[in-house]
Amino acid sequence: MTINQVINKIKENDPKADTTLLELAYEFAQKAHGGQKRKSGEFYIQHCLHTAFVLVQMKTDLNTVIAGLLHDIPEDTEYTLDEIRKNFGDEVADLVEGITKLSKLKYRGIERYRESLRKMFLAMARDLRVILIKFSDRLHNLRTLDALPEEKRKRIARETLEIYAPIAGLLGIWRLKWQMEDICFKYLYPDEFKKLEYKYEVEKKLERNQYIQKIKNILGQKLNQADIKYKIEGRFKHLYSIYQKMQQKDRKFDEIHDVFALRIIVPTIADCYKTLGIIHSLWKPKTSRFKDYIAMPKPNGYRSLHTTVFGPEGKASEFQIRTAEMNEEAMYGIAAHWYYKQKDGSYEDGLNQPRWIKEILKIQRDAETTSDFITQIKFDVFRNRIFVFSPKGDVFDLPDGATPIDFAYAVHTDIGNHATGALINDKIATLDHELKNGDLVEIIIDKKRKGPNYDWLKFVKTNKARNKIKQYSRNSRFESIKRLIPGI
Ligand code: MN
Image (cartoon, rainbow, N blue to C red):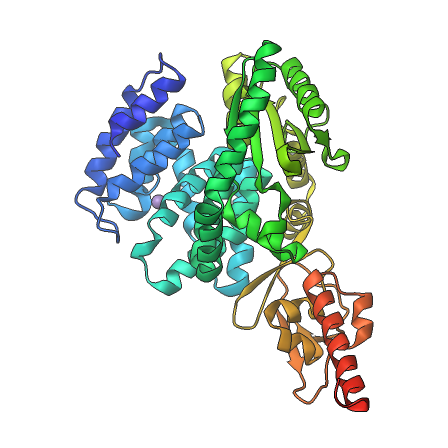
């Protein structure tokens, strides 16, 4: 990566951009980091350039890109924040300071998780751009994880999956969320990753491409007749999301029906609806899967039409229909939102922020204490999921309302089958106790226990726990029948 690549990318977005200060920042960063090298053997400046480049891809403003170039200077070099302030002004210096504060974490285990989450939200409420720089920094760190020892690799991957990826999703920066998740998936669950990658990238690729080509031909002809300019992309489903769906619904790869996914980009909103009409006239829609996020955008501002139809050969095919602007917003979320507002001059501070950002700011204003603030924010951010910890420090992602039994089966079937009690944050709790985000859960097991209690089905939340309990009692009933009627 060179500074010219960064500059060229900026000029692609804005040919008139003045990049003088950015070039000075590059010289400064190069001088400051000098001959420093990363664990990967690359010169340190490469990390700074990659961080800046991802920010340009997100179309952030120039000061954010500059802060991205300079983000590690106060911590890793002899130069200070004051020098950055003197040379590049308050705005850049405040951004760099925000990043420096974020990276200083004192605690280990759960405390570290809570501290990190708290810092992310505080930084976000102060200036969202700090988080964007942190994301870009993290993405490059993930891409060079191979150079780190195994334990550190896993810690960084886990932290990213638990904290960074959900926040990126909240901000609507899907592209970054997916990129981060797939890298973490690879390091945390290498076997599952390899299996899925093989299935998706090798076995199914040809079939998928041929099928998508068929749809493109049929649909393209109709869109031409209707005089709609269009772009059709075969959409890459990222592996971690397929994996998660398989986990949640306990299904096999072939049953994840939206593996055939296409995205159609058209010039105007009217074209979006016309295109939808054309698709529905060609193939029978699955009505339960139609979503109009243009008329009713998601809380984070996401807009698109979604529909699933029974395409050629009756195969379920998922379409997303949107304009180019919506597409940018979907990939870069809040960052793209700023970019478009700046461009058409309608940006007024605060007025165009999505509702939930205003909510975060409001919660922060109203909260009496920091811990109030975090409790309320957590409730919103991780609305449908909680993270709980095993005594070893492993983290498990469970649905809201999950119980120690769900946790036990998430750890291992044997632990679920032999569970007799639970300690939550070192206190005795019942097996139907509702777990909360950040709980430390220890399952007490009784090796002599014969199997799960059928009554657990009344309160478990995960399919995994439910299926295992049912499966066990089916098997044991069969065993007792076998004892009564020998020979079956
Ligand atoms: Mn860094």
